[in-house]
Image (cartoon, rainbow, N blue to C red; front, side, top):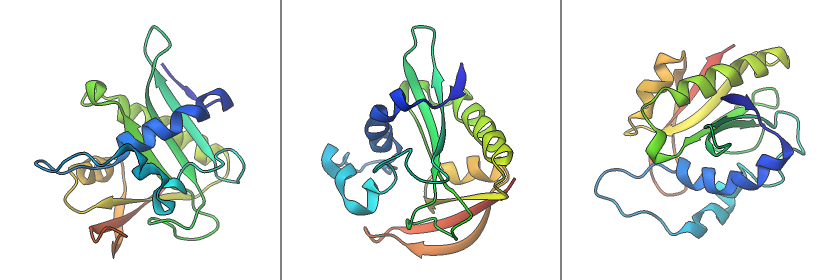
Length: 160
């Protein structure tokens, strides 16, 4: 089931933010406290308190949340302007490749559009296979940047 994010779900954002971090094959997982790096934590810090803080969750039958997608208007890697929410998405590893990410994104696009937003942005490492996923959903590359770790990233935008 895909549903709008509730305030009770906000406590899960830290776990899903950690699971959203792309780790190329052969690299070790970062320590869990990486989510508290200010460059990363901005994606969840005080979520629900700003315009553009919108999200959806995927639940399985036992009410376990297995995926989340959310947006914020924040000064982060995919930031464009004060009118464009930046998107983040995370699906737990055992549930990837089942269409959950697509369902999350499509539901969030509808919520964003209904809220009056014209577009959404995101930042993704250029070597992340998710680039193709985002392109299938209508995102286009608009810029290239280097993140705080020295990774080459794409900034991608989708018109709603």
